[in-house]
Length: 382
Ligand SMILES: *Cc1c(COP(=O)(O)O)cnc(C)c1O
Image (cartoon, rainbow, N blue to C red; front, side, top):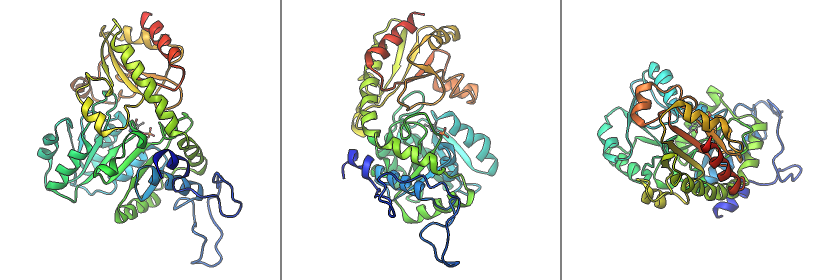
């Protein structure tokens, strides 16, 4: 099956007893057994639920993996990955990470004895130089949030595996979605999503996902999912599955609107810089073009005026763009990373990566592009 067909049919079959085309929302905690060791595939919904299973099969299919896992949030999915490790193990991560991932690494897991180093993933040797005998995981985000940097997944995977083939490589694929990029095909072990964003696509749920292609790794993650219990519920699983069925057409429009917004901002006199991998000026344009099947709907930009007032004036005056946390829904959202999504990042780290007052992040929705551009124009005048 090709990708657009997979979003609708991948891993899916009509429900067995009734033929329902969409899996029913199995709002049940437990399942009747005929004998203590005999059941019909499900025992207790923490370990598995048919609606969640339908979603997990869809996720595995979309990412060309063999096993998918749905969690209570994107962060719960990353938490499950870190639970694969032991005290003393080292993780190498990118230095322009989602703020919540950075906070989990440094504020939660560091105190349980995991060691983290944050490197600029533009250059593969920054990663290989940071590998020690204790390195167990390389965590990649590409495109990054909010600066839209691109890491070369294939080059990093092969360089890391050359040094030590047992090091796991995980990719946070939230911004790209499997429509634009399939990291397992590029040599990685784990793909993670905040399904809250593009996979769900309608700003109506919080959910995380992992997909793997190795049987042992799948067993370990299933054990963690069931033993720690941060599972996605059946209603949310249904909504995510329903969202996924239009992922391809939504992404197509997000990409069209994303490039149009990036080009509009690039020419605007109040804007000093635009961060979008689809602009030829982007330092990783060629890499993005070869690694991704399009450039997505996330656009960050910098106002010429480096003051909080200028940023707030823009953010408070949009009418189509809603000022809100999150991204990836059908509606356009705006964000001030320094005070919102990346508020918990230490000051020096923000300065180092360039998250300052003038930086604004847009999640470009799928409204009519004329309305989107007119809204940006009038808000920039404010
Ligand atoms: C939102 C987000 C997360 C966290 O996901 P939640 O569903 O909010 O827990 C992780 N990574 C990226 C890139 C995100 O945008």
